[in-house]
Image (cartoon, rainbow, N blue to C red):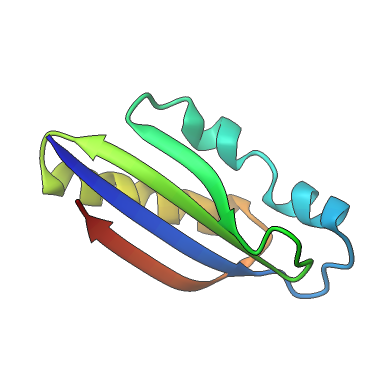
Length: 93
């Protein structure tokens, strides 16, 4: 069994409040937390309006499986979240 950690840092240009930030970033738990192999958490920049950091912990039988899940997460986020991905960090434990 392998564990991978994907951390994404977002920029939210023009975001004026934490409420707007929640609306723009909302649903990440629901979209990805349904998968029993994925844990999702807002891991940083919680009090800033214009940025956010989210971490996804993925468990899989192989690094290849985890890399595939990472790619699916990134692709879906780019399509559905109203924010720019500024930084992507991938690591394995």
